Length: 267
Image (cartoon, rainbow, N blue to C red; front, side, top):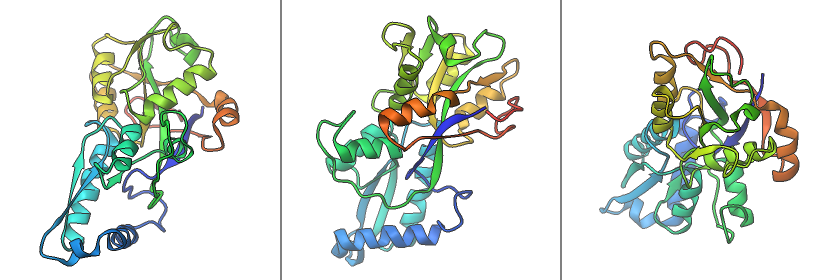
């Protein structure tokens, strides 16, 4: 049962390709800052940099904090902080406007920004420093609610993630591929991952979309809640349609069984 995912330059992942290590990442980042502003690295004044991540409760925010700590510890003259944001779209806009120096992004959103399409009216000059891990597209509901496919979401209360997030962009593309109009065919909410997990647990929504790595705290906590059994909805059958329209930046895989409590199947 496959869900779609995409490579992205979003975070430090200790399970990522062995060729990408902390030292390699620091070398890349160091080279970047030397090229941009060498006087701030080795002068007496610390260079304060902002790393745009995502809402609290997701993998990106946690990884951004780790990245900030590593940079602050190992790069002389640099103090890095992880900033909570709405996600990939906003992150790129923050970098493009100079309000953030580094940002976590998804490959498809970065491609849109580079091409000046989708959420971006003009091209954004960005540089990818490293591809660190894969993002999985989640469609989460509860077992026993009669939702077995994305098509079953018609008429349901569904969160498509926060405005300005890459997760929302992907969610809308998935719904479109299944012939679902998010403004007419579902009762749409635009909640963060933590808010979506809480709303699903409380019965305020029927499902939610999210895009990120494996081990998201909000999903882990939801799956471990007594009396709750989550279901990850398969989306793999529409990969070809999405690739045809948006380019070869998506491909099929699965979230391994037991990544979350009660999900004992590859999803």
